[in-house]
Image (cartoon, rainbow, N blue to C red; front, side, top):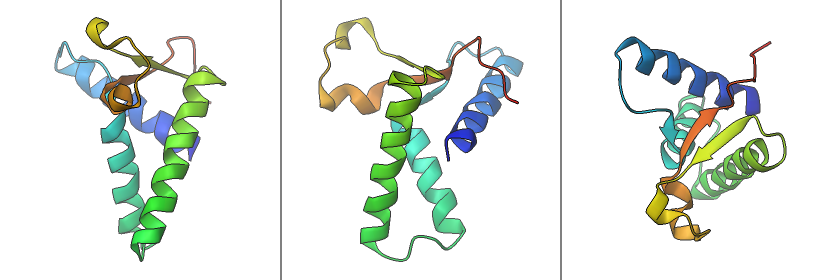
Amino acid sequence: MAKKIVFKLKQEEYRLNEIDSDVQGLKRCDVVEWYLKSYEEDGLIESEADLIKYKVLCEKVIDRLVKIDHILIALRESDKMEDDADHEDDCILIVHPNYSLE
């Protein structure tokens, strides 16, 4: 799951660089949504309980990639620097520049 998320963010980074966009990375909520849609397309989500389970799991993996593994960087707007849970989904996720996909 972690490699899939990192690979998606790298793909998005390359795509945005090709079109010379000022935007970097993806919003955290967009990454979670993309991941859940991919699981739904694979037929792994059959109920609301499955949806909630995979959403929580995805959020925990992203938290680990940011806080423990330091593979992802969470960028926040300067006026939203406080650690409120309300603003957690608003952060932009990018892959750490020193991380290489193996």
